[in-house]
Length: 380
Image 1 (cartoon, one colour):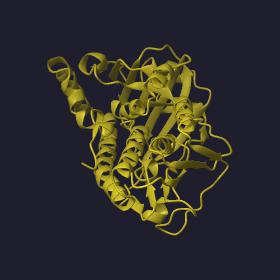
Image 2 (cartoon, helix red, strand yellow):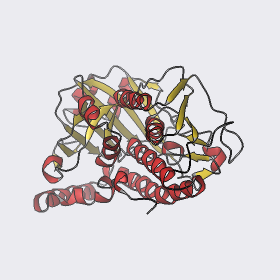
Image 3 (cartoon, helix red, strand yellow):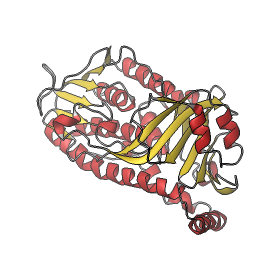
């Protein structure tokens, strides 16, 4: 480490808190500035895949994750209209060395916040960061990190504001009562799909996506009428309709495609997570990529002087972010096949693959899930 730095992180989300913790443990003085009056998370569930779990483990949070989450046994793909199983990926058998988890966002934020405070991070709520001109940290600081999400003010300084376009897809999210069967189910149908998995506390998380032309605003906090969700999936078989009949509160957001930032840093400013690379939710990688970014940034800062560290961070992370965001976009097309012969052929191929080589479908994503950013050696 070149010297002890004063660092401000804009945003107390998953990536911001993880980065703050990792940097504070390196001996830096870190402040997290959150514009909300309190650090709360009103979202629903998220999936932590092995690449994200590796970071939480390296931060010493493996046991806290085990306590707050449900560990997944399998991923099950189901034909939505018929309810017929297409393929089951047995995670415990095929990848016993890897861990997938289901956790409520609030629980994850809570354990990251506790870790940050234990590492000596100062957390200030109700504080909005007005980024200085490009390249500058705040007064008396050495580094300003933008972990301020989709509408990042800092990204507009180091690169340019993201200019998203509407994908003509919308997503609903809801929580309903549910049994703790540790399986993520993907119910696929023409132009739509529904993902569901359990959370602690006897809850079932639901994210449902529909292709449509009617525009919807981007963001997590827009309420919709449950009848609209039920209507979009009325052609699906049980148990989907039964789950949706239990929904009394639902949120809707438009899905927008964002360009991965060309530049992730300028001088003493750098971005991570959604500020650098918002991704569609079809691989459940938003939180996991943010955790990877956080660890990689801290690791590079520990290995080289700041200018070289930020350049190396961008060089490492940008290609991976592009690959993941493109793969997530492709996954939506695979879930939403509408032409009946094509759907039949695709589902038949998946069933055959599951019967003949049950581990192969999962191995196709080894590049994603087996990527352990904490095991990379830097500065050698």
